[in-house]
Image 1 (cartoon, one colour):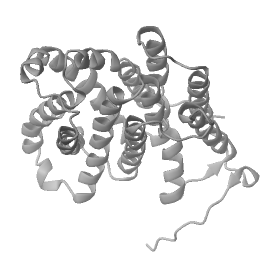
Image 2 (cartoon, one colour):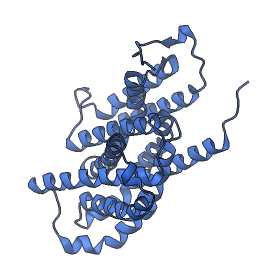
Image 3 (cartoon, one colour):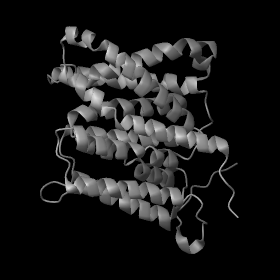
Length: 312
C-alpha cells in the first residue's frame, strides 16, 4: 500500500507550482520594459543587486560567509547564471522558444542524475526523456527539419536550462543550507553573469544606454523584483534542497503552460503548430516523470548503468 505524501512535501510542491505559473507571465512586463528602450540586462542588474544587498545583512548575522564553501558557491553560481541567462533569452528570441528551451530541465536533470549520481533509468523515465527530446526537436527544428537553435537567444535559453538543472541537482545532493546562504550565492552568481553579459552586449551595441529611460522604469522593475523574482525564487531555492530535482523541474513546467498560452494570446510572435506539439510533448514528459516516482525498480524495467564504487 502506497503511503500518502507528507504535508510538507505537498506544500513545497504547491509553492514550486505557483512560482512556475508566475514565471510563465514574466515575459509580459519584461517586454513592456524593453519597449520603453530598456534592455533586460538592467532588469537583471537591479534584481540581483537588490536581492544580494537585502540578504547580505541577514547572511552576515548568521555567519553564512564564514561557512560558505567553494562547492556551495558553485551551486549558487549555476542557479544565478541560469536565471540571468533565461531573463535575457526572453528578450533575445521568441517567447515560446525561450520558455520551452529552458524547461527541458527534466531531461537534463535525469541525464545528469544518471551520469553523475548513479541514478536509474526506468522505462517510464526513458519514455519521459523520449517525449522531452521529441518536444525539443519540434521546438527548434529549422525549415529543413534539422533540430538546431535558430539564434543566439535560443542558445542562451538552452544553456540557461542546463545550468538550472545542474544547480538544482547539486542543491539536492549536498547538505541542505539555510535559504539565506543559497540566496546569497544565487545573487552573487547572477550578478556576476549579468555584469559579464552587459560588457559583451555593450561591445556589440545590444545594451541600452539611455539612463533616463532606465530611471523611469525603476518603480516597475522594483515591483517585479519583489513579486516575480524574490518571492518565487525563495520558494524554488528552498524546495530544491528538499525535493528531487526532477520533480522541481516538472512542477516548474507550469511555466510552459502559462507562458505558451499567454504568448499565443498576447504576443505578436506567431506560435506554430510544431511549437504547440512540442510544448505538449514536454509537458507529457513531466507527467510521465511524476507518475514514475513510485515505480518499482524491477530488474526487467530498469536499465542499469555502471556505478562508481565509493570507499567508506
